View (cartoon, rainbow, N blue to C red):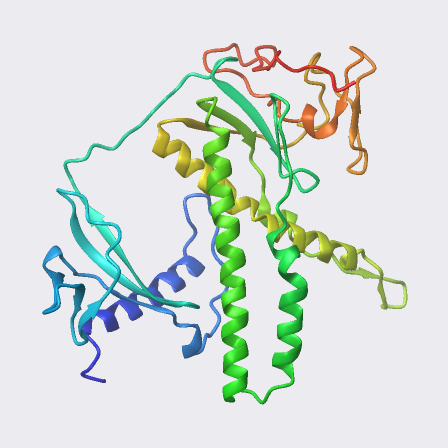
Length: 344
């Protein structure tokens, strides 16, 4: 064992392996387990943790620059742009290798800060519904259509050119490493663009409401591969996977699951609330009379024969079929937005 590595860093490596195996063998509260662990080489190990850092490790060097005193490494200067709030104590520190340099992430704690739990009762005045998709990234119940940014699609051509050049270089050569760095930085740029845009969108959606209703989407099922089709002679038949692969790329570019997590975080930070409803049938019911109007996925227009409502399918969808708290729960006490107007 190398004495130049701190013992707690080595212990954290073992703990990570143990956590991975536990997630694979032991089900969580929903009865689900993670995928089978796969071997990853040293190039995939991009972080290491110090489980017992403290405020005393944040010091200044002889030049007056802020440094972090990492055991077995020493003083490492860093950009201290976000000061530790008063009363908080540093508990752990994780050194992370990114495409554009090294970062350190601190875990801080203040036991005197109470846990905030907000239970806002939804009304027609403080709530809105949103429908997430790919034709429009989000459509709100008050008539706002938000377009899909497509950050990966806009950089896809540049990325493919770099990957073609990379394939022609000898592996692990100096030019190969330079191109690998450029590709990594481009992926990082795309991810940061998407993350910044999603945070701004989350704050925008909560700018005029306190409660947001949205569908409880199963993202993993949406990007699942099509099942193989076998003929009578055992040969594989077309199953639509070539078209589904393009749809999966667009779904992953939209990063809907990441946006849902950001929306929940922003709601908690602002003291607001997120309510998820069953995604089944949200596009099949009319928002005005709640009658069922069956539509295939290719049909993008909602036309209700009962009440005569004519509007975009995604615009009809954000009205959630969820009983209000305190209602009879019999399917008649539904939260609805009456502020909509027909698009015609």
